Amino acid sequence: MTSADTVTARPPASGRGARLLSFLAQPAARLPLAAFTALVAGGLLRFASEDSAVMLWSVMLLVTGLPVAVQTIRGLLRGEFAADVVAMLAILTAIALRQPVAGLVIVLMQTGGELLDDYAEGRASDAVRALEEAAPRIAHRQHESGADDIAVNAIIVGDLLLVRPGEMIPCDGLVTRGASHLDVARLTGEPSPERVQEGSIVRSGAVNQESALLIRATAVSDESLYAQIVRLVRTAQSEKSPIQRVADRYALWFTPVTLAACAIAYLVSHDPTRVLAVLVVATPCPLLLATPVAIIGGVNRAARRQIIVRTGAALEQIGQVDAAVFDKTGTLTIGYPQVAEVIPVAPFDADSALALAAAVEHFSGHLLARSTVNAAIAKQLEIPSAHSAIETAGRGVSATVGTRQVAIGSLSFVAAQQPTAVAGLSRVHEQTTGLRACMAVDGVAAAVITYADLARDGLPAFFAELRALGVSRILLLSGDHEANVAEIARRFGITEARGDLLPAGKVEVVKELLAQGHRVLMTGDGTNDAPALSAATVGIALAAHGGGISAEAADIVLLADDVTRVTEAIRIGRHATHIAKQSIAWGLGLSALAMVVAAFGYIPPTVGALLQELIDVAVIVNALRASSAPGSS
Image 1: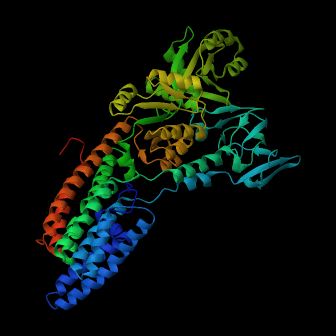
Image 2 (image 1 turned 135 degrees about the vertical axis):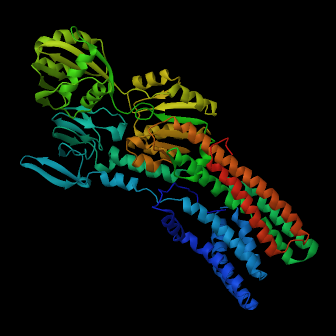
């Protein structure tokens, strides 16, 4: 059995030759390459001198076999009982009985299985470190004569700090002067900027978008929310219990059976060579090879569907999940506000109002402005040209379209620009909730545009399929307001939903489910989801909205912006695990049959090693089926 616990999809190198060279250059390739070279070289040398060939084989068996034995013994001392115990005993017995060829074949098989895992294992992501590096290093401490730059770890509670546009809030605090919008997506996952002004509480990690703010520090940087997120991810990863791989579970009973057969063979024959023969044919090649080959096949199958599986353990585990936790924003919803409705005021109609709004919003970089323009483009409206635009940051923009004066933004902004339009807009404004923009044209009310983070298509069918796959509990978690979360949950028949959650709150929900005995699948897309992704049995991140820390924390990453592929990942995982178990069962059955024959002395060790290799080939051929779609040949 391989000692590696993870299987990761590595980006393809440029060309097969480059991939092969990279493969052979891995440290894990040294022992199998040395064993293979020794077998070939000794075979050629045997034609000239049999003694020299045996000497070469014996030396190389010591060189390559002892590290394998030491590695296995260390694992046993740590309490790790795995499938490679029998392989270790076979290698040591081959050394003791001076049967180098049989021993080298076992080394080749044993280390080759580890190399298969290492070949699929990619470089670890640096996203956690990148998150730490993205944190501000410098803060601006304000005093009467100006502002001094200080290290963020020098901030003390009560400091007055200046935060300029484009800078990250360095610590949790309270706004004492200024007004602006903050990008809080890293913290809550919500796409809409948060309006703050004097008296507003601000959190570290939010990015100031528009105007300078003065904040009073209420926590030092190490105790602020951004630092807590990093610590939560690291803690969750370190606390996550390693799973027992499929092969190791089979080894728990197969290894004692093998040792019993060896004991019986020796008691009956008093021939230690029979013991070696039994160990060689019983060396659990199917355990060593079936799982990594099947898992790699599943990983490749998933990658073709833009599902990147970072750990082989996750592919085994995802087919067993019975509880699923979903983030709301960006996971079940699109992840940014879109135009939900254009409510025109006569004599305007919805399309003409939207076209005028898009003409003016072209001059704004605000998130809602972009959504307005995109909505007009999606409807293939003819957008007129505008000029003389004036934007008031965070409030609205006005411009001239043809000969018309158009203002769009908050009701107070439009009232200041075109006060005669207020009465007509107020009636519509009072009938709507949530994000909205008011528009007036030449002093006349034109429209109120509402925005919403719309739900993704196909979710009802997705949740029905998830339940059909045996997921009995589905929960919706979000940092959004409780009422918004409840409405989304009700729409899709989700009975368990919680809102107003910070990252630590999501982790607590996941831990509650784990404590109840559930195998938990967590799906999210934002920085705020990373701790819960790490804590879950299997974490799935949608990388389309940025990846980064959420992709680092997750076991599986969906490159396609399509949450419904979660069910496809479950099916692929189940298929790969089924193929691995099937290969193991057939392989161990053949090995057990060969073990009985070897115990009676009819199979010498070297022949047994070659016979085991034939069983290996059959196991590998069957395990390769995991790369095909479930149900295909």
